[in-house]
Image (tube, rainbow, N blue to C red; front, top):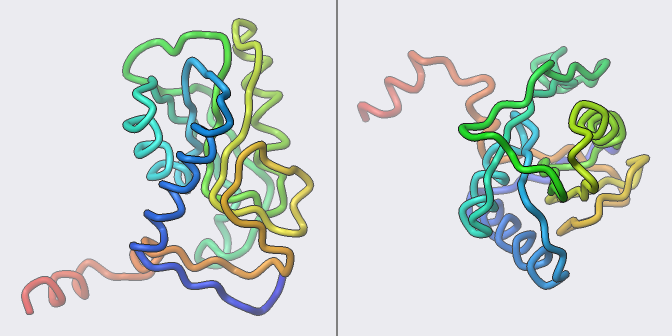
Length: 171
C-alpha cells in the first residue's frame, strides 16, 4: 500500500455513488436484489437500493479491526444475511465501498452462493478498486493503481469522542 492518502469529502463521496448507479444502469444488467457489505458498503447500498427500487440485504463483514481500523487482518463474515423481507433468488448485486486486497469479495461471493442455492448470479459493485486487488469488480467508478489509503468522510467518527462531538455541536 502507498503512503499516499486520498481524502474524499461528502460531495465527492455522493458523486461517486451516483456515478456507480449510472454505470450499473447503463450496463443494462437486470438484477433481483442487492446485498451491501457492512460497514463500508452500507451508505452505498442504501442509495443504490433507493435508486433501483430493489430489496436490500446487509451482510456484516470485518477485516480492518486492528490499529484503529487501519490494519487488515483475517476476514470475518456474519453467519446470517439481514433484510426486512426475504430476498428473492436469481441475480444479486453485491455492493461494497472498495476492493482493497480483493479478499472480501473473493470470499463473500462463494459464501453467498453456497448459502443461497436460489441465487444464480452475483455481480460486484464498488466505488474504488486498488491496483493490488486480486478481484476486479464488475462495476467500479475509480481504479487506483498506486493503492492509496482512502480517507472517507465518515472516518472522522472513528476517533471522535462523544465529549468532543458534544462540544462541537454546542458551539
